[in-house]
Length: 214
Ligand SMILES: Nc1ncnc2c1ncn2[C@@H]1O[C@H](COP(=O)(O)OP(=O)(O)OP(=O)(O)O)[C@@H](O)[C@H]1O
Image 1 (cartoon, rainbow, N blue to C red):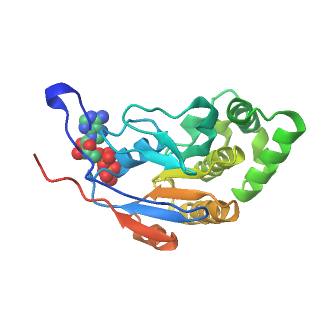
Image 2 (cartoon, helix red, strand yellow):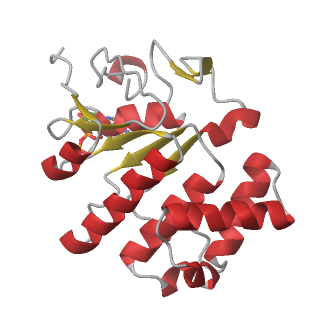
């Protein structure tokens, strides 16, 4: 539902989706069909009017159930505008360290090892970890955001048009890193995209259809 009271409107038709570990599911559909709404529900940013989301067999969120703090790391997002999702004055390493401490409690050598592994999975040059977000190209910033998401070892990644702001060549290399990263780390991914070529490189595709007008 979007809006409240008499303005409340159902914008997502009944949708059922199961994502297995290591599987990437492309979510496609025409503009306004509800793809981003579905992504926000899975991220726990927006409650579903009914139904709910389970992660690793346990309830994650529902109409009156927000994601529990201790399980927050389980579902991570890859944003459309990665540079804006990092603290501007912190280095990428510092931002990822903070996410690790907050979501997993990891610090020191353990955190360093998790950051290095995530950077490698995201094909992020290790030297870029010590830069601030404004010192990165769009593609580098998106790899950094993917590394931050992978570092906390989630069960599910939600990527809403993660390459739409990049030029075609950079988009291809970033999406290659993203798909390889989730497969190698056995993470399930819900990937919203308008790009049929990217959708075809996912494990499978599901089409969202807008609910009939009231
Ligand atoms: N905050 C909001 N308040 C009211 N209606 C909204 C809000 N956000 C989205 N909507 C409406 O919900 C419907 C689904 O929007 P959503 O952004 O999920 O579609 P989408 O499939 O991701 O579209 P696109 O491909 O254009 O990004 C649309 O009709 C949109 O106008």
